[in-house]
Structure formats: structure tokens, C-alpha cells
Length: 73
Image 1 (tube, rainbow, N blue to C red):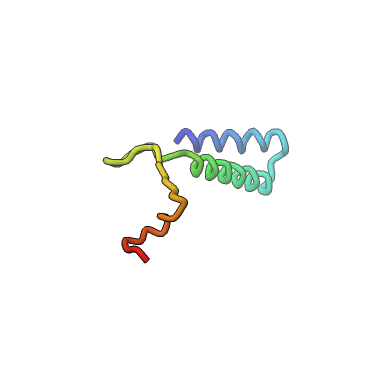
Image 2: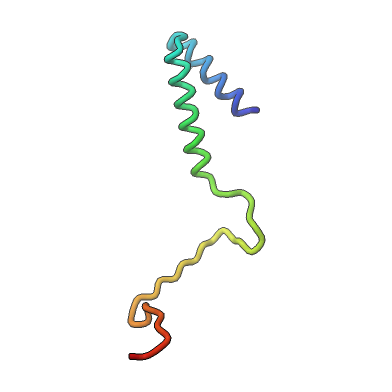
């Protein structure tokens, strides 16, 4: 509910400053939507499932044992 009120206040404020037109309303709503999508995509997940932790550990093995063969040539 709060984000909708903030978007509405942004649209009203932009229309007061730049003049009311359907182009201005559409442009401000599109800009707010893109900004909201970027903010949503950049936030990490808040709920961790059992067994998860925030640190992802990756190991890279370089050398003669990197092919993981179980037999010898």
C-alpha cells in the first residue's frame, strides 16, 4: 500500500512541476515501474530455507585432477 501511495505522490508532483498530460503520467509510471523492478531484482532473498546459508563457496580445481576421472590411463 505504501509503495502505491509513493508512486501516486511522484506522479502528482511531476504533473504539478511539468504540467499534466497523459504522456507525463505514463512516462512517470513507466519510470517508477522500471525503478521498482531494478530495486526488486537487486535485493537478496530474505527467507532462508533450512540448510541454506548466505555464503556460496565455490571451489575451482586446476591441474591434472580437474577432469575427475576415477581410473588411470
